[in-house]
Length: 354
Ligand SMILES: [Fe+2]
Image 1 (cartoon, helix red, strand yellow):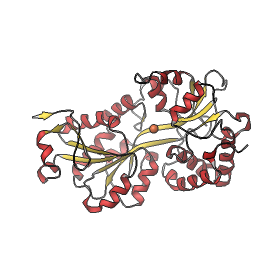
Image 2: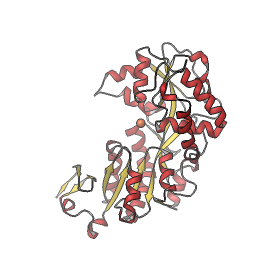
Image 3: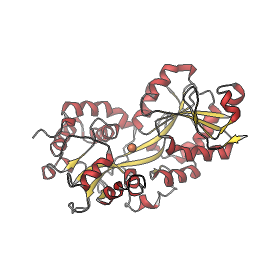
Image 4: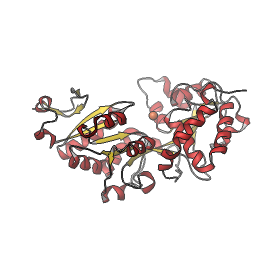
């Protein structure tokens, strides 16, 4: 009596994938708890559903997902020992570190994880693990930008005055990038750099990463900063085909490819401190780090698998080679608050001052 693939939100807000009719009646009962794993996810359900279905097909363990764009760390903290959550999925190393620092996570020492996931992309204390990587790169107008390489530092060069577009400086993607600049070059340099970048903006920061490509397409700017996977989302967007045109207007430039490498961030996972289904959670963690799951990530999401053995998708390979900045991601957590303060200090989101 299985309604495979049926997704439903239960009274605690869990989305059930591959729900059984028996499960509708008894979330949390001891018998069912043996066959489940509960996930709090900042990642949108469509991005993780293919992986969770593959996990359930392989192990018989059901997965329940609470998705929220914000506030899951706070929810975990408020629930404390009574939390039903086993795992936390996020899209930023900073959030994983925050969860660790708030005492919400439990270390996991498993050789399968440390072997599969390179050291820069996991917590040295084993509290969190990266699963996929994305790089924050420069989108450049194919038509108007002749050069084929760039550095983050160069974005502050007055030669780009009025030519750069970007989303809010306070967005986590940008504060993470700025945090790596502080780690590499120090705070004074980063402040001057941020002011230079602000004064090169075509207009006030607004929209998401794809809107910056839109503005290159319409000629409002020549350069923008955006994450790699949005190029795939635009190129393959049947629902909003105008985005295909935005994508066609840009070429990817991987910043600092000739020196330290381009900034990368991760999506990742952590075991909740009071996970009621710990054994199942560990099985899911091992599955997500496996070659099988890494292949699904690569094809479904057009992110870079963290496993060096699994090649990225064809579309990702078509952008050229990524040389990732090897700076350990714990630095992002270390400097992100300062990065956010600098964004405010230079009034970045107000746009150019001159
Ligand atoms: Fe995103």
